[in-house]
Length: 140
Length: 176
Image (tube, rainbow over all chains, first blue to last red; front, side, top):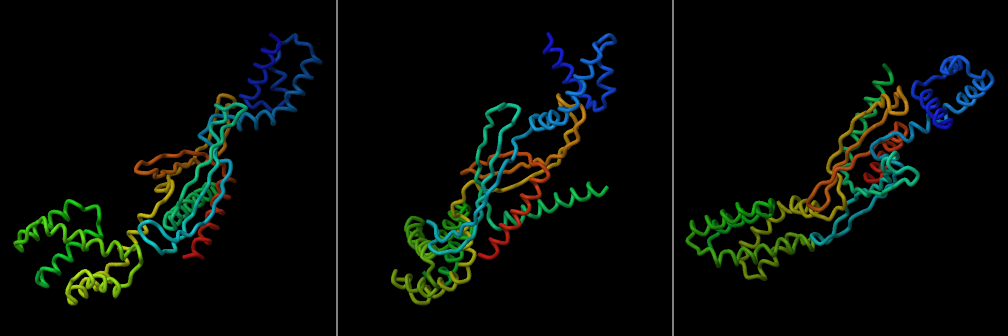
């Protein structure tokens, strides 16, 4: 019962983003033991930002990009043409499935994608537009 | 086969080579040609088959127009017709080469990319959040099907992704 009560208390504090001691103290009932109340509030305040970051990191999300690597290859021949020199890019993305679903055993998969030069140029155009949109929002 | 008929036939052949998916059209044009010139379709098809072997082999082995011409003469075609074909070959080979390169094996080819920004407003844990994520959708070609891949990136991840892609571009350009 004690653990459950503590759990509800901390969850409530987190949810409401209560950061001032007065707000937390106000949650306790009138005749609650004074020193215990202050001690609990102090502990909660100390841990609140760590708990908050963890909550954000483990909230539901689309699969997250955790790492990326690339390499450039030159294709020199194929079954349809015996001599050529076509550069191509191989991009490897390491993607972690929804953290909330995996708990302590994150599932990371590696996806390898091939891009031709034209595709890369188009992609960079798109990424540039994203960057411009971000600057526009930041400057508002 | 007169030289006029030969040029008409060559035109039909090259049009097919440029657009190998238009099989129906090619066959229709061939049978029109046969009827117009009073040749029976069967033998014509066989001749066309052997003629088509030459440009396909030429592409594979990167032959010059002179070599194509020599091949045709070896096959028994008159000098005039062989030269005509070789000329057509010279004109069309950049496009045909590009087509062949385009057919080259690509693994998980990226064909499209879509994105949107999300601002996480709240969650079951935190009433007010306010963090920005970039959500990407990549469309990949896997064999004859397409597959959609969804992922999220934080803003710092986005900026380093952009930086890396610019490095890839520099690298690709130095090899072109």
